Length: 600
Ligand code: M6R
Image (cartoon, rainbow, N blue to C red; front, side, top):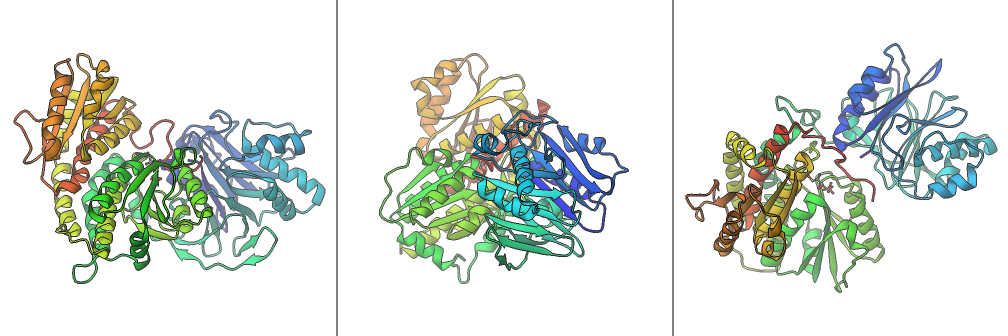
């Protein structure tokens, strides 16, 4: 969603801000802007649309060694140049960028800003106007900033510049991610380390309700009461090259191709000595102790959770419930006596999941986060973390994180089963090795999937994916992939459920894609394919070797029964990719979407 970059140092900040914002493009945004302070004052450039347009608008002759930049994903007020950040206070003394949502926006406006003419429709503007009003009373910027923060309710990551002081960026956060990057005679601020990796790989975390005073050669963290906090920097282990597309036309295609590498990396990372699995003992104990596991996630991570439930229940004999994060609070189930919450999140920043974590922590329940970003909010706030080792995932459509989540869940389930003394024949690392090779066989056949995508999706407005058992979980993910990047209305259905209503939508040429990888449902799903074909559907069957029929569209290489989702999803990802490509959609940055959804 929204992104923040800030720079203070000896160089011109303009390009650093623009390059940083470009690196944040993947998170999704609809407008952008930068503010650069120099002797002539604050220079602000904003656009509705892409960073490329912002680059064109920025006056190249403007130079300034302190600046802040922002990409905005509209929440309050339409996407427009006027609503884009940075926003300024009435006198233009203060300039501010903000991620998050100010929940008491109306209350602050009505109580403190009656005499201020607001220039935008955003909740952000009230923050900068409030700071100025408080400054008029206190004549102390830091004190005004502090007082403003105590009044704000909601989530925020803030970068503030006082144009009377070109030596300082005021920074604060609550519930929205923000980091300070340390350099040699410069420092940076970023909502995601990816934005400033070119400048530095040394970062300092900021905790909620802290203020950070960022100068070019000094960073001071304070609590809201003014107490100074000492915190060690850490090295962000992201290879800057992993954030580039290289020779690929799109990040999504690169990330689909990376899946076998990621699976092999997971095997390596989780391989212990003498055929054991390498996992934190505390996680093992927490799993063993749990009498019920609650998996909380959103979108693709939720779909991985559905598969994970099967692993944990079938192998480790622990009952599992999987919940959509945004619904959990409203439909909270009766909890067991010894619950363990597992949060699955590629980004580790999803606000809906975090809201559940805050709630369950308050109830005193232990939590494990499975994420691609150790150090992310969900990782820091949970008791334990399992790392996906998938490398940065830039395309909005999640691919390699999904398969990594399933692989790590399989390892976790087997480890728990072993710890509980359940005798298992299943060797997850060996089976994952077979999966990695099968994935390669699939990614080597891209032309075939491009051809099928053309045949199935070229002109259609809707599509259905059907499956049973394990395949039902994968068709839900397949449908999400197709709709989010190609804008084709798609649904993933349980094969047997079609007859209970949805089959009414099948007409001549409606695409129906069936997955069949499980012996126990092979005949029934094929029966469902016949039913829709008899009503004119354009059918495509993707089956697993050993279960195939001559008429099948594609036969997948065989892998262990439990791990079929890791393989059957790859053709679905490629079909979605080519469907979107041939419809001229923006594959990596689909409309209206954000990579990490940091507002509830
Ligand atoms: O970062 P998270 O895994 O928590 O994100 C959850 C969803 O927002 C995410 O999976 C989303 O559904 C993807 N765009 C799907 O491709």
